[in-house]
Image (tube, rainbow, N blue to C red; front, side, top):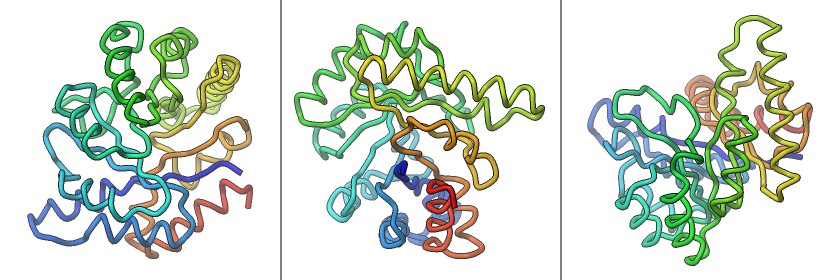
Length: 239
């Protein structure tokens, strides 16, 4: 069965909307783990729009499963990762004006910087994943720069309105999974996945972990975090 990483960024989004101290993403992470989540993901953005430095510091001390830090490829973020030593880092592209991450990292164009930064983090014992499009050349580049994992950007599949387009995107994801595994890369997936669209992706097989945030947090606002996590775990198990 594939693992589930729960992204608690949008618990922090609600908190920051009022500028107070609740709801607490650390408490949400505890509830997610108690419900069976295999890991906790947070994205420490350069503009600190939701998750704050203190959140990551506390999560590093309290997460019992695995802490995955999503971050931009900057000197500041690499320094934070080397200080806090999360279990894994997922490098993502980041734009100040985007609502959420809008696409995959360009591992081809950024190869020199990636190779250097990945080397530093791997020396510190951090597992490094690159958030990339389901594109063969990007996957090959991810392997060449030394990534341990790729996380396939599933947003285009999730946004497809027509059945033919969804089928085409699923095929791209399937080809990407096979290519990555052939190169010895671990394969994760995320972005836009929810309780309605995740089934066909799970059916492909070959994905080790799904990192899901907004959909689980949205569901949790209605039924609670523990139930929301358990419902997603049931879908990963084919239930």
